[in-house]
Image (cartoon, rainbow, N blue to C red; front, side, top):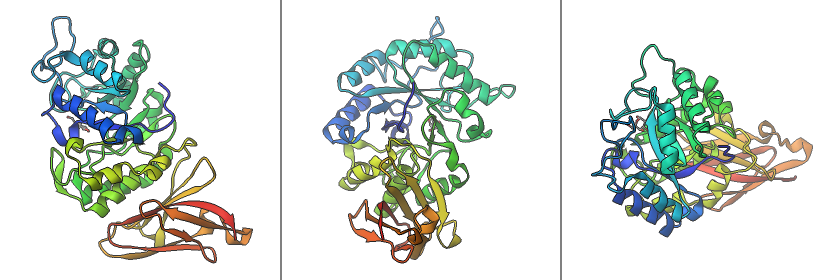
Length: 375
Ligand code: GLA
């Protein structure tokens, strides 16, 4: 499958882990439609680990747990497709999944065919229990080849956590997205760590194979499987904005059936989603305000010539931040300046004498969509 913009959807893992079933999946799909999330672009409904029986059947096929999914997976796929949604499932390149259910090692071609038969549109492919004598990149290439020959267009979502230099070989596997991180937790520390992990790998995302920073925690508020302390509203806003600017897939991880208004507002911020979905797919780059690792400024050139510029304050204290417009290709000496709107508040701002500055509370961000205008 060719996918030119990073996928968006909802995944069961962050909140529900093994507590999944047909009712949860179908009712969450209904909420994607009724809440406006689908209209905002969220279209994949992904069942993560723990959907199968612990053993394959006599024909070697994986079997959906009948207590959790009494009508099987084709039924789920049909329900989603009838509502304009897409169906995602999960397996793993090792001998068991991370939660110790059957996985696809040496069964890649059979499993890909079964997923195709069930009407699957997306496969998240994890990395646990790989035999020591096997090589991760070969295992991912195997499933890539199997999916490319299964007779159905299935988006390939690789989940090898950025280990074994994933960025160097993942593009050769046929994967459409690759997990560059270990598992996210619902805490400020985790958001901050995952953002800083990106600094070295910014060139390895974009059209072809999107860099997946892991599922969103917006709206979890400390509840559910990866719920820890939860985050403040400012921290969730910063998390979402960073994922958008870095063109990460946006896979919601909260219980959308009980989502609060703040989470809904953040997750449906159309202006930020437009940046994440920008058709040009230009890679983001990083400046460090005041040279600080904790004051990243992330910039992306957009299809219509605008610049998206995100200022992030990862410090525990307020900060004044500025960039020289010269550093983003817009020197005032060339008769141009930056002028734009902040995408959470709508406030407008412009550069002055070749400098764009703002001030940020602790753990806050501002993201501007800037026009390059005559000075
Ligand atoms: C790994 C993945 C997670 C999730 C679990 C399921 O930890 O990174 O995203 O899929 O496995 O067991």
